Picture 1: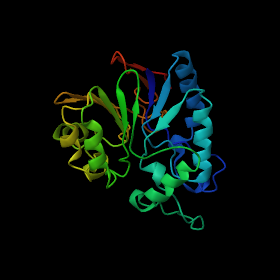
Picture 2: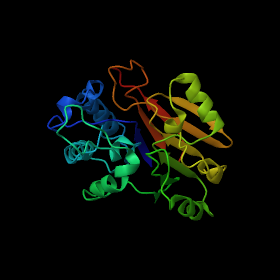
Picture 3: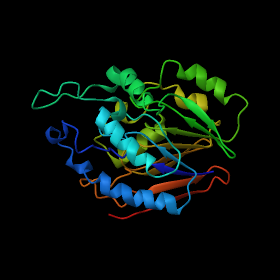
Length: 264
């Protein structure tokens, strides 16, 4: 199976009533850039598309539906894991300066709202003719209370597993790399600090881990696991990195991984 992996997209619906009051102009080119990605995915004949979360810049029904319509337009089955922005929202539209919720406060509500449109965000595994694909919900930098027990059962007697999550796992190597690349980052947010047990439980049981959230790229090897840090799916106007906007293709049968850079 050939899988197209998209980093954080941060879709914003132009009709969302809060758009004009949120200074997120850096993501307003996602619409045009997505058309390049769509054409590339179709050209490469991908079998499945996986979004690594932050598909929307904040949760609202308009942003959700806008993103779903775009992803559906690719014409290829797609899945997503929950990013922190996918479960955060602006609940009060009246202030001039809207207040963003914390993801843990609205996680359950937003997850159910995505599900009402048929989009699953919960922990799940997809069996393919190659690797088993494990989709993990850790958008608020922590897993669900049920994840550890579920994960141990899933990993038992399985081989060739690839994990997809939004937030990078909490390992010394991950922390050191993030600190080197972006010293100002608060590590409690940018690694899965709320579930420090996670890497220990998957150690030497997962071949590849694909994560987003950081908005920059990286390739790490921790034990026998290769960790792929995937940059922004769109081309952020404030981060002029040639890595942004790339698409990563992963063949679950051959374990071949390659990236396509679409330019500005």
